[in-house]
Image 1 (tube, rainbow, N blue to C red):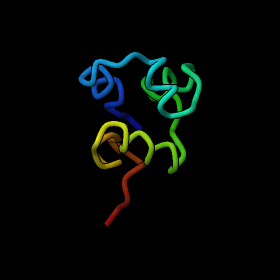
Image 2: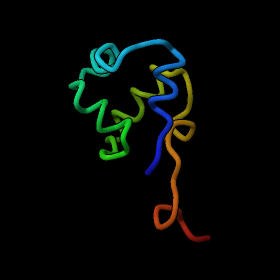
Image 3: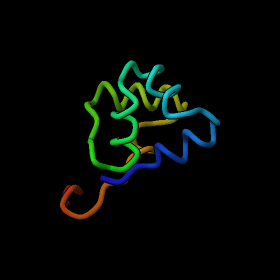
Image 4: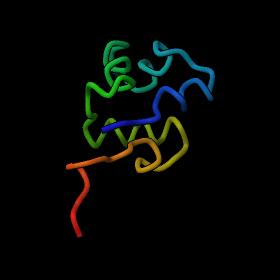
Length: 70
């Protein structure tokens, strides 16, 4: 799953360390999130949306098999 966490973070002009403190996670977790190597829990996704003042859906891009077939 792709995301725009890095873009949002740089728009807000905050470092990975600052974001990690706001989320109460390690800087390594923020790095993994930004690289798309870690999918956050629903709670962490909600915290990210709160920090960035947006909806969870605005942060994450579902592709391929992740989408629900209708």
